[in-house]
Length: 143
Image (cartoon, rainbow, N blue to C red; front, side, top):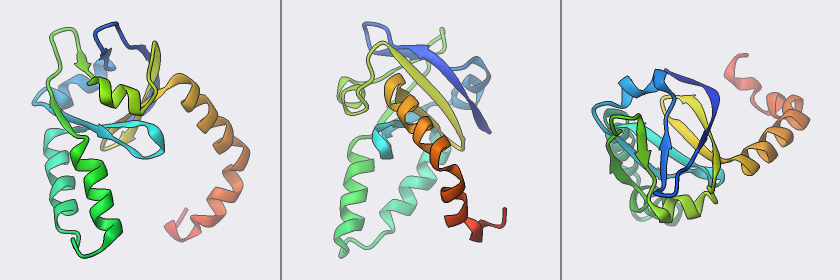
């Protein structure tokens, strides 16, 4: 289970160190892809395979399903964590998420999200400002 918020830096080779407590769950490989809200998603390889299979089952006759599949699957790249706990972010993914210098790694239960520090701060401020309204719109979840 991935939870928490961690600040890390991207080095000049595009590598980011992942929190030590998550490395064992990603030791068998992971997949990095474009995520929603201009962040990156990192999935353990097994969880990625399940997600990719669900995406592949979406009807190709629906325009939004095709677009979502293209967005997620075409941006994906398999990665290995090096002995220092780092993963290399391809330039096209770092550019998509506007990650330069400092980044935030956020645990999202079954995946990690990597955000540019400025985009994460903006997202958090907006979320904190509107948390009650957001919660009301999610009342069907049973909280």
